[in-house]
Length: 70
Image 1 (cartoon, rainbow, N blue to C red):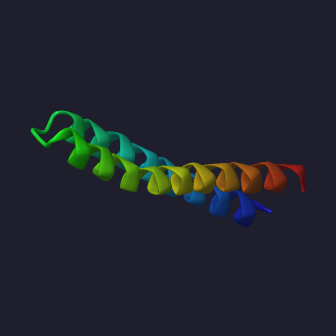
Image 2: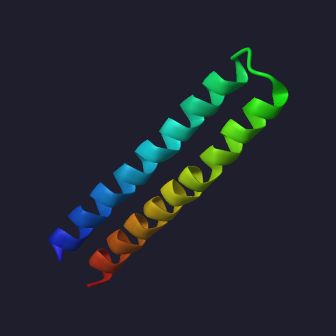
């Protein structure tokens, strides 16, 4: 089941990349000179991306664990 662990690792890395992207984008938005309402709307659009990235990371970790158990 090495292929399952490799697939889980790749999915987990994709999720981690998405989380890092969200962090960097949020930091850039916080330091920008946007009005409060515009910044809030930009950050609210970033929340689903963050949730999806966390979900990908969790699914990747689950695949790794299943691959280790098999």
